[in-house]
Length: 206
Image (cartoon, rainbow, N blue to C red; front, side, top):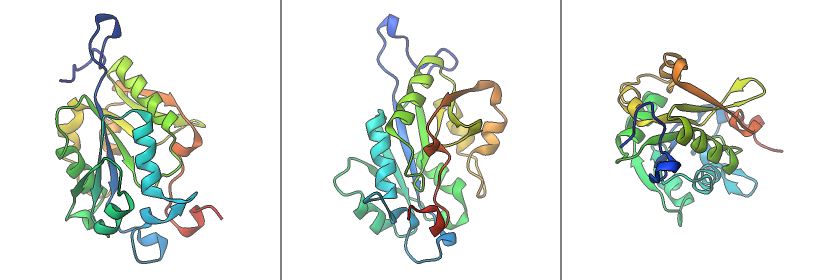
């Protein structure tokens, strides 16, 4: 179980490493891309962007990956064939991002924290993920990446915040929860990939 403000583990006491699940939000319509199909299936450097996100989380050290699907769910699952992930369907995905956060968090078992990642951020690196997990393991606080003075994604949430994440509504993600708990936040230097998402075709590499 997570230990509220005592850090996720104490290596000196020989306790096991913390268990951080990755939750990848890949259910949205992506209407600003101007085409049918899920935007997270668009290729970036030879792979669907959702696959790049999943691979970064796995290489960065998460204990499991849960992928939340909705729009074009079967195609998203097919794009991740061969990867050890769990899929969770979100029938209410059209109602906003919060519904996918709720679905992903509800699917988790006994973990110490959850790294909530967006399926349209293919430039987040394994190093960014590892740094967030390390910061959380050390402090037990919310861990958020920062680059060029700006806070980005993904954000790692201690399990004590799962109930609050489960009450989210609308299309705003978890920003309101984060804003209410900045006193329990650790910022982590990261690459510029934590600031880059894909909303329109112009955001894709040429």
